[in-house]
Length: 197
Image 1 (spheres, rainbow, N blue to C red):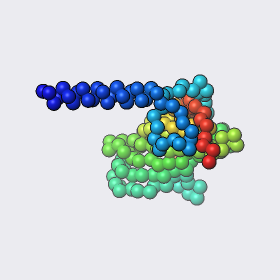
Image 2: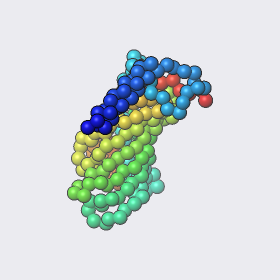
Image 3: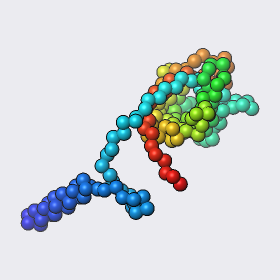
Image 4: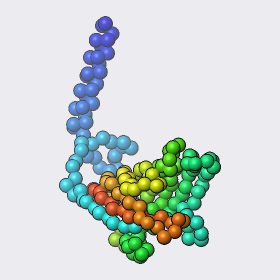
């Protein structure tokens, strides 16, 4: 019992010291900064909202295909375990003009009962003002249903610390080897000062 009491006392003392150290954290010169440092949260009032509307055009066969199967272990429906890689344009208009970005990533057929895909991809922007900036997106897509919803889980460039949602609805496609999806993308980001190196 005495050992347990001593252990709890030591734990409380060390926790109190750690909290006091954290509260007294001072900003130090960048050359002296350790590899890891915990600082009090500073809320950034510059959080900004963004919105995009575009059309995802996927082509499955032919010389201009945007999606290819990398792994196909199971020939039976629903192709459980299949992995596809894609690089699909996100157009500003349904006629395939005004390139906004490219959606680059992978899809994994992760549902044993239906055509359900786990998607993980980057939206790599091509618009001049956003060139090189990205949004990271993850979610589930049921191939034969609409609407679809994905989470924005991060961003780079202009879209640092991005969060948000991406909503899609499947449109009628002129060919079974093509897929058109209309997307509306909503989110927030917080501008950050980049390292000067």
